[in-house]
Amino acid sequence: MTMRRDAHEKTLMPTTHSSSRCEATASGRWHVADGSLESLKWLALALMVGDHVNKYLLSGQVTTLYLLGRMAMPLFGFVLMYNLARPRMKAASVHRRVVKRLAAFGVLATPAFVLLVGWWPLNIMATLLVATLIAWLLELRTVGHRCLALVTFVVGGTVVEFWWPGLLCCLGARSFIRRPSIKTAIAWLLATASLWLVNGNFAAMAALPLIWGFSRIHVPLERRRWVFYAFYPAHLFVLALALHFASTPRCARACSQVATNLVTAPEVQPLAGAAESARLKPIEGVSAAGGGDSSTNVTKWPP
Image 1 (spheres, one colour):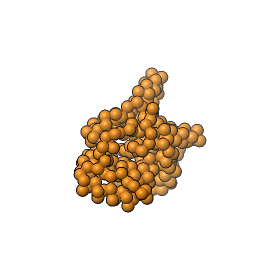
Image 2 (image 1 turned 90 degrees about the horizontal axis):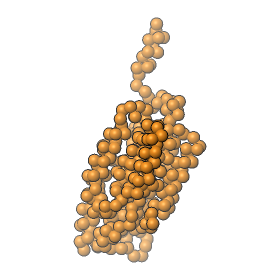
Image 3 (image 1 turned 60 degrees about the vertical axis):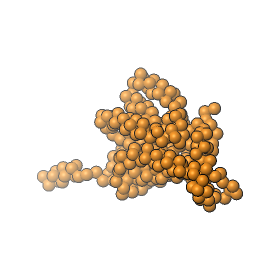
Image 4 (image 1 turned 30 degrees about the horizontal axis):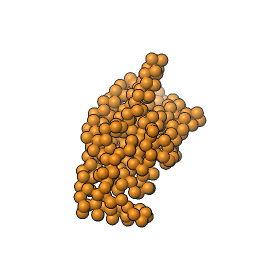
């Protein structure tokens, strides 16, 4: 009787980090602790902000910020796909709720995004929304839904940031998270590498070893579900206001001096022309939830 009671009490105990890892491994899913996943999201937010400050306020002069910012899109895509791939997500209609949130905050971010970038492509919220729709359709596992997922991918990729490579990056992460193997790892690697078409380099691939490293540790950090949703439109509005004030002569001289101190180039484009250069916008490439636009100093894609 005592042994039976002890066994029953163990089933009622909350799942620990180590036991959840065992369960995840047994079910075939790749496991990352919740705190570590939240840390990746905060890191992606920081990389996104640094990239946007460099892009809109410093005229893209700080190469280091630009390269680090390329990791934001893969990180946001991974965090989103990991959360959507959790057990019982389909039964809980999580995909539908995520689509609604992304749509609502994507609309809120649109005015500031239009001032900074333009009407096309749509901001990163739209990229993550389309990726969520595709993942949702694939979860339904019928031929009709898979065909609709393909149509969503083809059409959606024409109007969102980071285009089709951004969607492939998210779907490659989803494939590996659900069925970890050499085959799905290679698919994820190639999908992330395809961001070269948008970024002009392979800096985004640095996100993959970073994700692996965080999967090996447990960071005691609580989840803040609404942080990315609210932060994305808020930081774009702040950047739009800062860009407006940066066009004044005094601010232009001060910011130009800051940029000069950050880069080794002998000449730095004055911030007075930052507002104009931002309006001469090349086609953007997808944040975190959330999150990292392509830089203005890369060639337009698609041609």
